Amino acid sequence: MLPVLESSQHLPYPKRPKTPDSTDRKKAVLYSIHVYISTRPKSWLIFSFLLLQLLFVLLIRSLPVSVSPRHFNLPSNPIINNNSSRDSCSSGKVYVYEIPAMFNKELHDNCQDLNPWSSRCDVLSNAGFGRRATGLDGLVPKNLAPAWYWTDQFASEIIFHNRILRHRCRTLNPKAATAFYIPFYAGLAVGKYLWSSKYTDQDRDFHCQMLLKWVLEQPFWNRSSGWDHFMMMGRITWDFRRTRDGDWGSSCINLPEMRNITRLLIERSPWDYFDVGVPYPTGFHPRTESDIRQWQDFVRSRNRMNLFCFAGAARKAFKNDFRGILLQQCRDESDSCQALDCAGSRCSNGTSAFLEMFLNSDFCLQPRGDSFTRRSIFDCLVAGSIPVFFWKRSAYYQYEWFLPDEPTSYSVFIHRNEVKNGTSIKSVLERYSREEVKRMRETIIDYIPKFLYSEPEDGLGSIKDAFDVAVDGILKRFSDGWKDQW
Ligand SMILES: *[C@@H]1O[C@H](CO)[C@@H](O)[C@H](O)[C@H]1NC(C)=O
Ligand SMILES: *[C@@H]1O[C@H](CO)[C@@H](O)[C@H](O)[C@H]1NC(C)=O
Ligand SMILES: *[C@@H]1O[C@H](CO)[C@@H](O)[C@H](O)[C@H]1NC(C)=O
Ligand SMILES: *[C@@H]1O[C@H](CO)[C@@H](O)[C@H](O)[C@H]1NC(C)=O
Ligand SMILES: *[C@@H]1O[C@H](CO)[C@@H](O)[C@H](O)[C@H]1NC(C)=O
Ligand SMILES: *[C@@H]1O[C@H](CO)[C@@H](O)[C@H](O)[C@H]1NC(C)=O
Image (cartoon, rainbow, N blue to C red):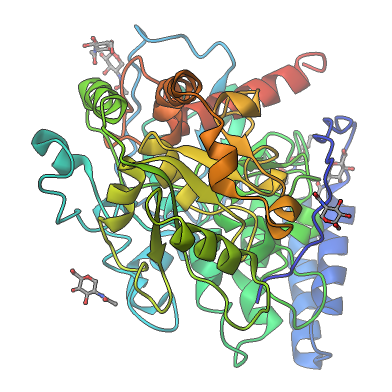
């Protein structure tokens, strides 16, 4: 399955690397072709094809810039939201590339064939929010139920694309742009190739390699060698970081052309400055500011009968599996802990059981899953429940732009070894006074908008949601970095 990484305890947050000086595009193209060949089976057919491509590229380079790429229609209507009564794009504007449809629209249209088991058309419907939620009667306020969907955790590429087309700081003039967004559905492209051995490394890398080839041919690439380019990749970073043949994932992020592009991801590599962690999409997509205010009041006033809760499946295959220990502790303390055993596929389909559990608990246990992060962290926070972490990399080194700086202000950390040594989680959590619990919950409630992707493509007026925070952060990063040079 996924690469199991040794967790190190003190990861420094990576510093910004030196800004680029100049660029040599020809070298980059040649290098990319070299990499392309060296990662492929020795095939004369492919080699001669590449040679022709190289000649073609050199030919294009010798012509004036009038050779323009083919453009395709985008999935959504590219109307600019130029309402200038909101703040004035002081960090600059974003240009959205029109990339060939094979890199986004066609993948989306092909939703019945994106993973090996079942169609993804349902989960990617409603602009990426998925099917409307059902079974919430009596659980959430009646008028908020229509703001809930069974959103898939890997749907961010579509959500971000729809939103950025309507961003108030979008420009149609690339010369005026501080940032360039590449609306490539990298996660959708690799999805079905991850799981089956009948697919090859080449299958997994194909879309990404072709996309990068296309981007490097754009006139605005070499202005910055990609330093002002960014994209959303809707899976965890480890799905794009294959280093050895036959291993898990695509090698997209490891390709040299990708080096300078900033990647928004639901789980980042703590060592890579160009990976930016953004919240997993949850099911709540408020339609108005008032939806958010009402939800904040609702989670604040909940009467929570459980001290803590845990949802997850123990891995029977591993002795002493950490999730198994948590599940056991939770069951042993059933008067203060609610457990949701997700063995089999019981928790995979849209279900209100999670939401109900988080709404009824002061704390929620968040061990690592197959990777360090889980969507459940955000399900928990949105419900106003306080997360308990056992790995620092589960959140503290991930979502810097979205979470409070001080971890103890909104979460509890218990080192996994203490739990393995027999520390009772209940006894740790019981030491928090009602006042402390309330204070932590208030911090979380203040931050709830930053964990959400709101429904209107224009966003929610004065409230910044996760998408707004991500794009503001990118623009600020790019404009700060380049100020001296321009
Ligand atoms: C990335 O930036 C460096 C300069 O910092 C530059 O030398 C390199 O060519 C760039 N990579 C690509 C693929 O353009
Ligand atoms: C921008 O706003 C002005 C008025 O504020 C309006 O006339 C114009 O059509 C708008 N442009 C776009 C592209 O929406
Ligand atoms: C790269 O930049 C130079 C100017 O530095 C420009 O003349 C050239 O057209 C650019 N190449 C491409 C492919 O856009
Ligand atoms: C998931 O739920 C939907 C609607 O409730 C149902 O039609 C579908 O069969 C369920 N899928 C699985 C795998 O249980
Ligand atoms: C766990 O127990 C071992 C052996 O008793 C001890 O060496 C270790 O320091 C303990 N770890 C923690 C985190 O308490
Ligand atoms: C612009 O935004 C403000 C504040 O969100 C809103 O009150 C106003 O109606 C908007 N104007 C237009 C033309 O959309």
